[in-house]
Length: 485
Ligand code: SAH
Ligand code: SF4
Ligand code: F3S
Image (cartoon, rainbow, N blue to C red; front, side):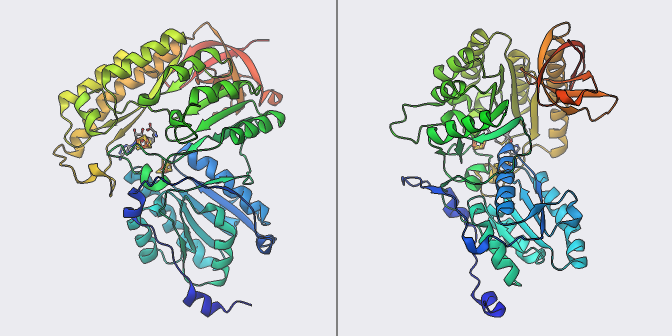
């Protein structure tokens, strides 16, 4: 039997280090075959879990893995977070407001912990990778039981075991470059659409972005592991996969001689027989001819590209360290539009990068018009400690940036509407997700071009199937249509 006090005293914390997170060594990436130590198998017997997920699709996929690990050690999913015996917060650090939400949720959890001292609370994902966030957690939120990072989720059973025996917060946040964990159990949210990580980490170091520090170095999964996973998904009846990575089209650069690229992978995934393939996010610099060829020739690869541009001004792109110019970006989408007629292109944009002038911002507005984006995630620059942009001079007030932001959004919203209007009168293929949130006997799903489409039907047997819908109405955020028999 482990002596509780002793464990507290012996408890070694592995704390994050920003300095270490910056380093990229020329070391081979290790692929680890995930296994659970038999001593943890019944840790969650008769107990339940709930995971709150914030941030990007990468985090959603990670939460499915953590759910898989928790179920493998006996926990069952609790529909009601208030009744769960263990609650995990899978966090995001991309912008300050993402973190503000987490501090808010933690405030609520404090009360719950008071009422139920047996509740275990764990914080994971990108936030603990930041030195400051982990220090603040330890200082101001001592009721948190476990803090672990993006490279430590495979250790979850041991961390829970330690937390049950220890009064002090268990901390394990490695700031290394990371490895690849294969064969983890997963509890997938959907029975038709699945996330498939093809690479982890990021080596781009865009000057505003925290991700290279929180996720470690760019590392590609072996092609065979990816294809096997997609083959399994096809066998289980999945219709759609979304390939995930911070820079998906850098896939393969770190493997062998780097000859096998993202485009090659798309061709091979197409052969598995999966009906729909999407991916996010590609980096404009790495969008090469082979990837474009795959988008044009592979029937399964959907005619939608999320293609983050960030800015339409060359000086700003340069100081962002994006490594392409406005012209190169526009040339690439011109080529794509020729190769994939009707392709829908969406993007990410940052407004108010330090030192950006109004004239430079206007270049982004004109790019939005020129590129004819059919959607954009727009963000006001948020300084992230540890990134180069954090300490850059930033003379424009937040109030002014909000004005620019509103001006931009008028243009991007027009793009959403145009993207929907062009389908009026046309028949689109919709993969049905379920009932529309508004109720009204409507079902909804996404078309091939990734347009949210609602149509009248109460036939729930259509969920998970692809149906033909004739578009009758276009709104800014969705299309409405009629089911074709
Ligand atoms: N890997 C993807 C995007 C990752 S983060 C890519 O490179 O495209 C998603 C988006 O968040 C980014 O595209 C960027 O537009 C935005 N973002 C990242 N850091 C930000 C910051 N510090 N402030 C505001 N927006 C940011
Ligand atoms: Fe961040 Fe740039 Fe990497 Fe995207 S490519 S995750 S924006 S550093
Ligand atoms: Fe957020 Fe981390 Fe994803 S910072 S956007 S959860 S990689």
